[in-house]
Length: 239
Image 1 (cartoon, rainbow, N blue to C red):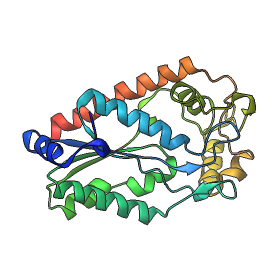
Image 2: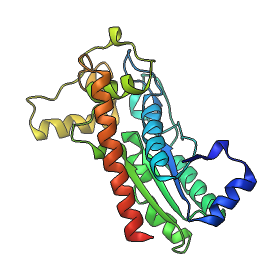
Image 3: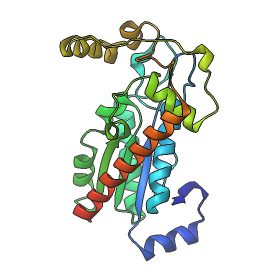
């Protein structure tokens, strides 16, 4: 892996000339994650996931875009940018990478609210670049068996595995969907997309109280392995 922000101009240009480079752009958010997780949680987790797949495969790792589309968390704390803004930033970054002769980009998403912004990004950039640029958008939670949550068991376990900035004594049970029908879950999910506090009351989807560092490492290994396989499948098929 080459962490691009630590590189020097002559060496990075030589490496691009030497082989077909693949760039990775992690995208997170700054938003509330209950009283026990920091507002940087989404950015912290996606940064670690992107770092791991980049290290194993020699990808160029770009700095994480730490701001995302999180307006649904108001009035709880969030620092948000518009969907159109995030899409424009990603479009500009990918176009800039192409100008530097980097023609394959993985956008690794770490926040549910960013989904619309990264959707069809590949089609947009394929058209803009006249088929010279390949962009693949992947949300890391799609690569694990467990049902994802927000500041619940999964995210809390992941944070325990990668960070010391977790206050387990402050962890509280949030919205738990056990026993709900699919229709009920879909209805409350729709409400959460509009107002997460109204849907969950305390800003937590799930129950973080039994989260463990060990489980976090297990989930992280699963996500990394499955995501890496998908990235390699794309490269084998498309490059």
